Length: 286
Picture (spheres, rainbow, N blue to C red):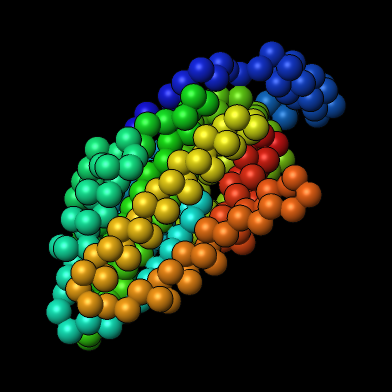
């Protein structure tokens, strides 16, 4: 995954952004008799350094992270589904094999790759590593990548299977320029949350390109992945004699589409995730 790959979108710093920033800072430099240059240089350097660190950490967090957001390199969670069932024997291998085969048969995803991600939280006595499975789809024509992340865990004889579809945009050069250029006005508002590791600067400059066609491509891929995983789970659980009525009901709840008066409304799970992505896009463009 290339964080700068915007496909057929012209990823650039816009002339309008440069012009407005120059006018704003020139006015402040003249009004403060040059003192603003020092303020801009200090705040801009801090923001640029922290942003570079966040980008490098995100790339490294493919295999390593600190306390929160183990999959942030792949973007934000678009949809997250968990299914819990009881079975005395761990049938993880069978379920994952069925999911992989269904993905190969029904989607362009060629297979699932095993990845190990380590939590290197400094407050832990020792780092903890857990295994996940990853399926990668080809980016959309507007540089949005979609990644399927699966994992399994157990609590006695209770088995929990989770899958997430991560949506990741490219690093928007214009958003990056604005973040640094206006850092004297914004840094104090986000630095506290940043130091608490409750947020990261990468999300402020990473853009899921806002367009109708890109929305269609994202929705199609996300729903296709979720539909395929749901169907594979039903196949695998039925084969092992596990009741799947609740799983089928869960699928209807999360994948439902209501068509009324020519308008299509997505199910609440998908729609809620779309609202989060839309908010992230607006934040990056601000």
